[in-house]
Length: 72
Image (cartoon, rainbow, N blue to C red):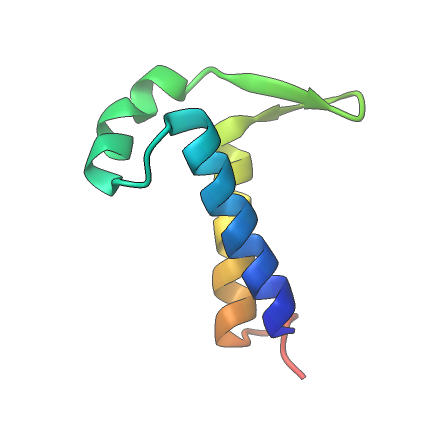
């Protein structure tokens, strides 16, 4: 299950770097209001980019700390 956490954190950080061009949290927090309305289409569904980043970081934290659903 730790691999799922690794994937979630990696994909979350890659999305952050792809859209914000930085990993510095102070810079990201300043830029978030500008990315509030950005959406992308994946397999015919529209997703909010900030929600997707938050989802993958959440999956990463659950997998890395072995919370319910991703524990053995």
